[in-house]
Image 1 (cartoon, rainbow, N blue to C red):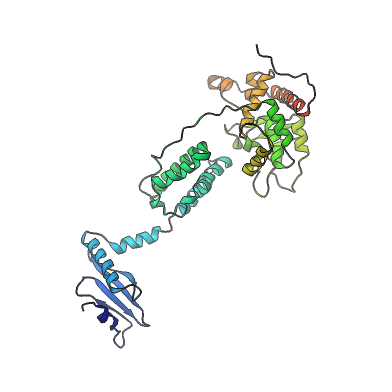
Image 2 (image 1 turned 60 degrees about the vertical axis):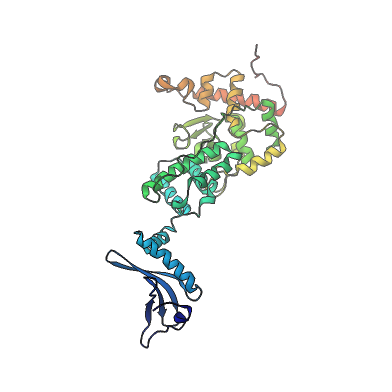
Amino acid sequence: MKFTAKSTEGLKLPPGKTDLVVFDDALAGFGLRLRAGGSRSWVFQYQIGDRQRRMAIGKAPALTLDKAREIAAQLHAKVKLGGDPAGDKAENQARAGETFEHCMSLYLQRRRSEGKLRPSTYREIERHLARNLKALHQIPIHRVDRRAIAVELARLTEGAPVQANRTRGSVIKFLNWCAGEGFIDANPATFTNRTAEHARDRVLKIDELKAIWHCLSGGDYGDIIKLLALTGARANEIAQLRWSEIDLARGLIVIPASRTKNRRAHFIPMSATVRAILEARPRDGERDLVFGRGQGGFAGWTQAKRRLDAQVKTPPWVIHDLRRSVSTGMNEIGISPWVVEAVLNHISGFKAGVAGRYNHATLDGEKAVALARWDEHLMAVVEGRDTNIAPFKRA
């Protein structure tokens, strides 16, 4: 029949029928489906090869005849061009759940189950994708384009250019995995711009270390910063420190290879102040972690650093600057460079190349003396007392 507003309104199911589709004479495949109970829906029916396909357009009368005919005409044109509207719709519905967040969860689960990443590395990747790129989470993965990624990286660049680059690296690897799994055809992050980085060379003067020390309150963050200033260890090595890694009887902290950047165990002889800080720490039942709460070590860096910066009036600095400052300070009080490198657990410089392969000495005795001398020098400045350890005078 020819569809008009009047003719379609008068259509009713014949007696004994529970379902009937009536087609329009003017547009092939355009029909109105009637069901028992009064339901009325516009449909479009077409053929692909030897298969008959039908798809719903919308409910009548909420969707008017004219609008339904317009949609059906568009679908008819797609079929004429070789398309499959119902197949496209089914695929889109199936892929609707394949969001950035959904694929990210699968990716992180895969990386975690592989067991190849250090816990700290996994946490970094998780932070890059789960927190830094949160704005992309609800977008279907196949619709995440280069512009959307570039906008988020640009936002990060304004305050943390290095973090933006690290996030870019993580999302490129993630989307490469997505391409390999068939979620996307190509990686849209590949040609995003990398931000220029400037190597940091900030060294905190001894008076700045004193000012920082005096502004540190008790608790996890204060003790961590003090230990970093005394040992030159990496931030996460101390923030994730475990009681099982502390040997008070031998006066030694042993960071296992699984938690160090260079995959080599790090032996840190305790100076007097380091021992005092650790011995004063409360033990939380059977929990092995020295700092933090629950299942993880200390993680509240941002808020704690912001509170500290509000008290200490020094030029901007970051936590990793403490490591550079310890290295510089030790060299300035006459500690041999190769001993300083051993204290930092470096394998570059004096332990690089052939030297590193043939010289496996850990210099534990020299490290203990060096850390004790640095402890005495730093604490004398902090406490405002005299000491026989002083920096070399430059010519």
